[in-house]
Length: 126
Image (cartoon, rainbow, N blue to C red; front, side, top):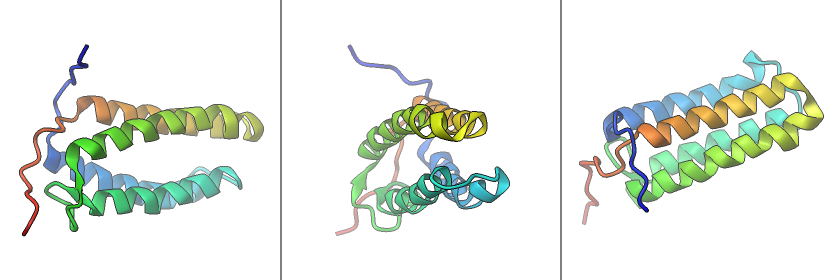
């Protein structure tokens, strides 16, 4: 059975959201007063997500190596990983970290659900 998406976010908007997400990840530990190890994992996700976005074959990708559909599958996995982090990291660090990871994972999942991963107009350059 194939899952249908809400399809309200096209690739251009998704690219903007991705770069804003990276900026958010850079500043989030300071804004939310996150301590180690919670802050470490958020600082780790920032460069990983930036690399994913830069390497995706869509409007705002630079290197266009990763197909946009694969980008979506990776983001789905990231959403589940962040939600799991709410239980593993958040359990030890308290309610703020638990809520932060759960909210962040839920936001990534919603963006995944709402994105049309077939809408990319970018093409690989030869």
